[in-house]
Image (cartoon, rainbow, N blue to C red; front, side, top):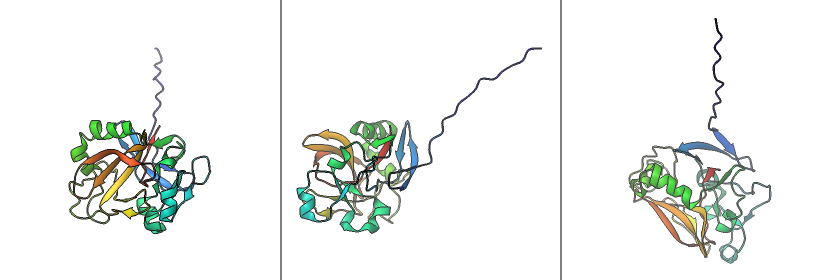
Length: 212
């Protein structure tokens, strides 16, 4: 009587959490073929251990031509909810996300929105956290059905002004459109994901990381 041998099967499971260089942990969510961090990035160091400059003053922020970050309204209380706001100089280093991850490119966002979510509208609603703990009413179309939990962290302008927390969430991509860069934003009063390339590298926006 013969002996039957089964094939060895190897299963690769998605990580549940990922830590940045500071030790902050982030949940991981699968969206189609992509793995995203569920929270906005809040690291104060690059993945090689070098520090990112914390820039508080509006004039200093406006004059900055190198990597920098801040907390909305210079209030660290916003760190654990909304993460940090980074200028694009920090994004462009390629060292902002944990090793094995990168700041989502314009193409990454296009795959997410156009292929997985089925289009910019109602894609934005599908990404937003529901209800009104952080989003201003009416939080149009918010379902958070894939647990991306997008939050309205606002931005910091190239003049150093903080705006729109509660109303808008802005995310840099790592894709340049010199002298600007591609970004995305989601609004309290729309179910759409907006794609833009009209903001220069001095703006401070949230960042989401995606697996390499």
